[in-house]
Image (cartoon, rainbow, N blue to C red):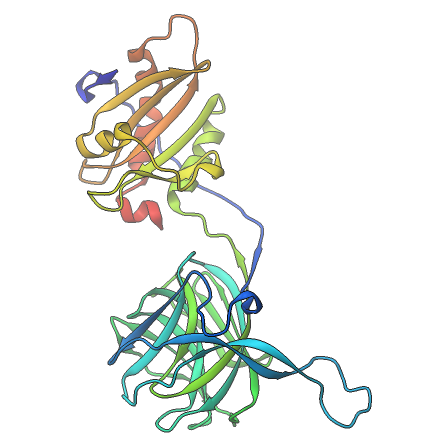
Length: 355
């Protein structure tokens, strides 16, 4: 049953959101990827001039961590590594390979890098907190300039580098590590902190990837990510609400990425529901600000709009509550209204929900 906002009773409750999560680990296993192919969930991009590079997996000799039994020569094995095809000889050409499946806030990102060749440049590194191909941080080494630098791209423009001169050899593996926590950034080369700890608020979360410059060819091996799972603000609102209203049976927040798309759950009391598609009900709530009620298995469901700072519907909130004898649609809305209004006060816009 659809009921207009004019008939609803309003109230305001402010929430302060706190949420804690344990660490998780992500390893990118290139061994399962066929030679000549790209790992899944990765996309080739470019910053600056030229076209994106053709990244692929190849087999390469890699010195083993195990010592030779004879002590005469190092033990080598063949492993699959990630490599970009020789890039274009353009000064402002920065090939990127970005992991698109997830964004990260606090993490430790480690990868082995070996610079192989390059006429114009011999430079490679790891990119992180990538917002898009024009906005991110990078920590890189250069065998041509013998430098270890950190810098950021903002709207495609490079900042002044921070780092120092260190001898970097071609055809030698180096371990690059970046540790991010809040606005703190630390960079390590072979487990030695080579750049003073930095603070920067330009990008507090984003994707991770691999990076080169111009025609440089480099190998990337054994990338690993230890991270604190990122919680978007919409989920924090739900978690706090569940603590304040302990008789709720469930909450989900739906948004629409573009007008032609179906609504999708971006946060929920049931994490397995995140990513599920909504129905015409949620789409109508977001598009027209209508309110819906319904009943299911001993619970009453109210779906209401969540508004931005200008009072425009930006999301749909589905509230599931215990029902009781004599429960009416109007009473259900009266119970759900202060919950959603409290969320309205905290969520200033669609972008704030996703951050």
